Image 1: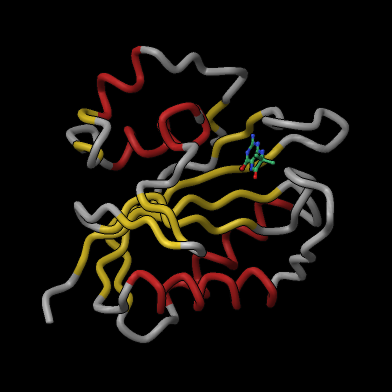
Image 2 (image 1 turned 30 degrees about the vertical axis):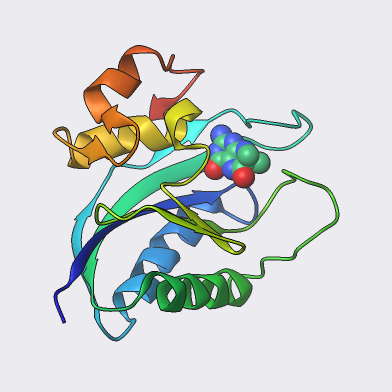
Length: 162
Ligand code: ROI
């Protein structure tokens, strides 16, 4: 089976967020059938959504994988749980680790559990700018060139960390 090039968004705003992102990267790399292709810088961003929560640390990772999109989703959800992720009633609340499949090759997927490209991708500076760093020529299925999406996406306080 041919491998898919997949982009994963990583986010954390609890329990030493930088460490959460770094250990999530290690865990993703330990999955059978996954090979890292690129990893962006870490970025700090103010919360999108409820403001009474800490700033986030975000990054984007590119992998090659022969896992199906749903199999990969289940693995990422397990890594979230292993990082102490609790599903609370509050929508868009603080979290130790969030792992989103942003893109799965050029596929468009619309299933109850999984929507790819990720529904918020075009409006989220904390996704688009890290993506630009590792895939400047990317074309997003259904949405067009990444460079074009960036023109209408302000930084919204996003800062690259060293
Ligand atoms: N806000 C920022 N800045 N970064 C995130 O990763 C993030 N993730 C979320 C919500 C709550 C929408 N806000 C976020 O899920």
